[in-house]
Structure formats: C-alpha cells, structure tokens
Image (cartoon, rainbow, N blue to C red; front, side, top):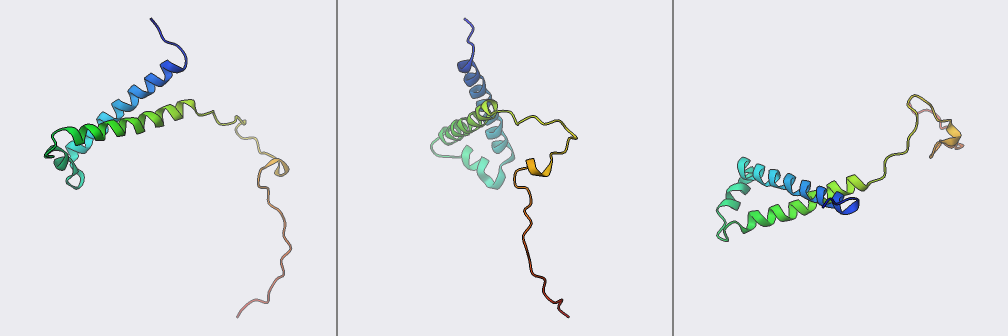
Length: 104
C-alpha cells in the first residue's frame, strides 16, 4: 500500500531527521567535545542519556526538515531586472536636515 500526500511527507522528513540525529550523536560520541562523549558513555544510567539525546535531537532535526519542506518558495523575480524605487519596500524618504558649521 502506497501512501501519498502529507502523511508520506511527514514520515519521510521524520525519518530523515532521526538519521541526521544519529549521525549527530555518533559525532558527539566519537569526537568527545569537552568530555561530553565520555560522560555519555560512562553514565551510571547506562545508554539512556545517549538515547534521550538522540530522541530529542531527532525531534528537533525532523521538525527543521519538515518546516523547510513545507515553507513557501520565495517570490520569483527575474534576475537582472531592477525594481523602480517607487515599487520597493522601504524606499528612501528625503528628510530635511540643517547643516552645522564644520568643526576644526
């Protein structure tokens, strides 16, 4: 049975997020930054701290992947075409200013 649409998209990105999290936790365990890898490996609770790090990192990475997949694309504008100043957002507005005498 083949899934389609949003459930498939969500599951694919969730799986991708947990794969990225596994690579992330493996990198922490192998590189041992600041002694964190050895602390996780020598924890008296066993593998639970590393598994929890993987779980919550996986949730974070899966959410980031899903959000980037569902984000709307940027508006299209032909490259090399200049937008007239009156159509730009935040176009410069001239302000009257009094000039001071130069300091010496």
